[in-house]
Image 1 (cartoon, one colour):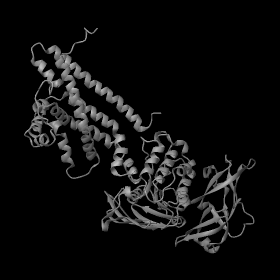
Image 2 (image 1 turned 90 degrees about the vertical axis):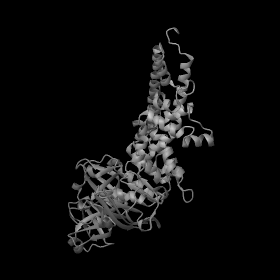
Image 3 (image 1 turned 45 degrees about the horizontal axis):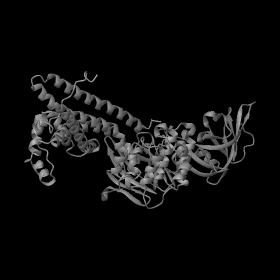
Image 4 (image 1 turned 30 degrees about the vertical axis):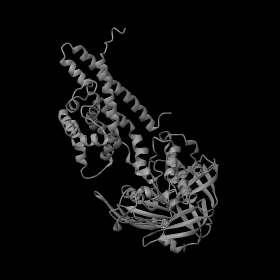
Length: 237
Length: 361
């Protein structure tokens, strides 16, 4: 039976585990920011809102290589942000898996914000008003009313971001290169395999793994989102 | 209690309203689109006036000239939304606890158990809003607003989602909020009966302007045909007991402290409320010796509203305490010398009353 299953090389397993680590880190770290930006875009009304909206969508429309280059310039060891973080906090992005996570997070950010924003906009503002008339401060309204009701959208946004992180290639390879065990994620591994004579079969195996992960994430999110929706509407029992 | 003088523009619609009311229940009355809900938003702090001033119970909540604006969460004004707006992801109990938690720490608080008991929602505590009927949702909405111990309770058409048969019970909610919890109420309504029964002051609004302010019987005395408050809508609802059905004549006799009320046809209940329109009531100073009218109720005139028009509205306090209204010509009022404190006999034709006017309790 086990003969029928394609065996994975240690390099491939490393790439898969790295991809999962990069994907989870990117998703979890960018989620709070995505929620904040989504909330501001959904409920805020201020000059410059269009500008913020455009800036958030930039990674979606720019060539990924350009995004990677911008990240390199900003977060490289000599970049203004990267240099500062390395000097004061010892956080280094350049040529590290953390850099891959940053690139993946940035690339997935617009997708997350879009999904979360839609779900926040779908929350009836009068529920928030009701909470306000009961004396609840803004933060309490957000965490007790808006966020729980937008939870299914949050889930959807997180999964989109995670899937995007797993598949991110252009920005990652430009920003943090393609170092085995450090920044060589599944897409980079597939790319390397296709460039290797006789690597086509392994490339296909890795592609299948990537597809399985993406579909698995989608199914899991659909399941969770459905439960949350039932929970939020109070139709469970 | 409330003193208000505000202006707000929203697209094509502009609202310019000023009134004072010291009544325990003030009704904002008018057709839909007249600006009642906008006014509620202004009082609750969900909308900011372009100009003007709002004062509730001696506290300035908004004053555009002084750039004062107290946000909704700091006003201590409860709002019962038209469709309750309960938090769908919380149980009924959690909805109430939410309000209790954020109620002001100092000052009066209403005991949880008493609010729950008064509104009769004890058996609903574990349910989610999606599992409640319209009426139950409304009761929970009132309870939730009360749990925040508001200085003033705003109710935006609280009975709109409740079927007619249960309106009386719903109106009792307002009376309880007012009496048991000593909370003044501002009620939005376009039901004359509701307003007549509950409100001490009516603010009649049309197209964003105040048309009239005053006690309900005065407001509704006007006979103008373009008015939503025309005399045909004015009436009173009397609580009656012990219905007796006369099978031969097919009439029901309802017992009221001021006399027997004859209703055409059977009434399938022991207790009932009967709605009597002002235009169906005539008055006599003496018990009429021979008349076809069977229903003769004893009472005292409590007020006469008459302007320069042909008609007048007389309010009568019946024996037992219920109010009744009679729409008469001004001529008749003068001819019979009907004035406050005059003893009168109220005559109601039985043919004007059938099961459509009777609400079984």
